[in-house]
Image (cartoon, rainbow, N blue to C red; front, top):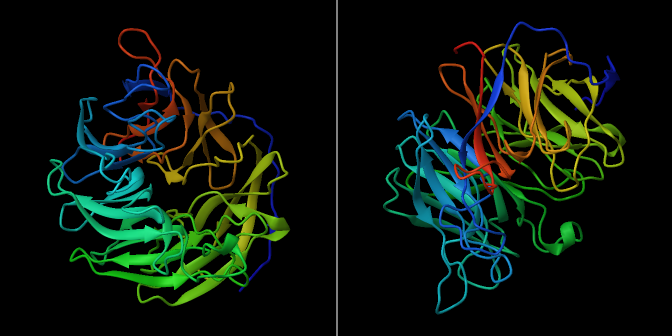
Length: 401
């Protein structure tokens, strides 16, 4: 494992000259009359994918008043033009008071069988439940829970990420569960990496021990070598790790200075892994790159305020070659979208104003025509002029893929 962390460049927030003329536009606002109202569409959309049929699918959070219940949520379909259809709503079982199928959907993916797979971050059939793994058809039928999690489960707890891989399987992470009971991670386990086949076979590939391996994995990316790379979000010192499809685990890098990962890394066209790390007390984030063998380099420090509960989204290398990400904070105070070169120079920065959304936290997705799609968990404007409860937005002006 290589831990060399050399400072190459320190940048202030200066926008570099560029030829692109970009437009940030609200595409769809989620309607919720008030904080305590019933929201049939859901609110706070925070996951979006582009599926093989050319439509977008995503997850939205609570559909019921937060004073009475924490949960609910929806899975929705949206056409590129912004027509939204709710496919599935997570509801409370009136006889038990539990959200039996889960609540708070956090991540979805399209499987090799064409079905939608997802994880709900909390909920389940008992008081000890800690989320579910589910699937359904793209028309909303056939919903099925494939895996239940609990607060002391060896198979994981509080799942936060799922992705489809080139081998036809799905892979993901949970933020807790695994080794029970450790002294670390509040006795709830420090997280797991899992594999799921489309036949429904679930396998834990690795359980984090919270000491030599850090803790709290926050997603994966599949690299060109067929292996999976991720980061941990432990604020006492996070890591970049590698897991093979058969479960062979290795820690590639431990971030120095108690830095931790903010999202899973992305492999760019140069073969390097890119992402952002952060030290809790700092007012900057660090753009890093890392080879698949574990040679780490800090590319740039970028001034970026963060809320403790939010970081930066996973970076996307878009058709312009730059690395794009969503930042819940910053800009004019409502959050912003920005892009950097692989050398760390800021190229674009588009600010939210509240009326066009606020708190962008979901991953960016790029369509074939070059348009970027993303989500905010707050605000936006409805057709009647009132505030929305989160939105789907587009950024136009990038070249086609």
